[in-house]
Length: 325
Image (tube, rainbow, N blue to C red):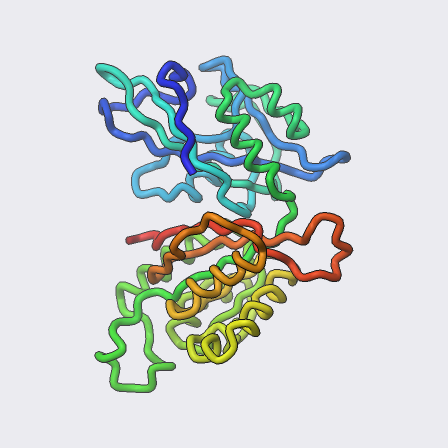
């Protein structure tokens, strides 16, 4: 979702070097538990004398999720764990000879450690309830980012649903297809996912019983020191035999403690996400993409007033393309 700001709102952001070239940036609603609910971080930038959410431009070759975590650390001093994509904001910034479009991707990010110290970019940080932060920020689009943050509870459950990395053509593999391994291109995708997915803090890892699926998530499981849970329902033949059982299994995975990482196949993911969306009343997804090495961040919650007996429902689903496509 993109929200365009008036061309007159140009102070928020550094000038770009090339007229007309889109400036890519990323930021986050950094939050922590407060006595009355979540508190979010708002920073003051003396260069602009404004109050804003932490954000900054992408470095060359950097993904928005990486940039969001880096900018949070640089501006606030806090490490964080991403949970979900919030929104994309667009507006114009000064450029030689005119203006250039700027696009900022925002994530929800829970503070996981650190402390604030004055730095070259930020001289003050305030932790505020969302309503107070909305009143303080200098730009209307930051208010809309906070609106997106408030649409779901901060403590929602997260599942990272990954399609395995490239493993070559089935017709070119003479052995058992279960044992078809990643190609060199697939290993590069695996390594890129190994850099990206830990930003979302998974603590549990599951895989369809396919070597290529297990290889895709093995480095993350090794870092966590946890075994990969084998789940036949997330394989193509297991899913096709009983898709409703696979949906129920995914909901049980989501109900576990901490974010989960699940690696599955292209014949599973589109229909599984669509069924989860339908059962949760989530609309507007459109076609569910599932390229090799891509990720769906699935956000689940219980219905308002539920005492925990009812299963979770899918409340948001965001697609992260293959990081090295």
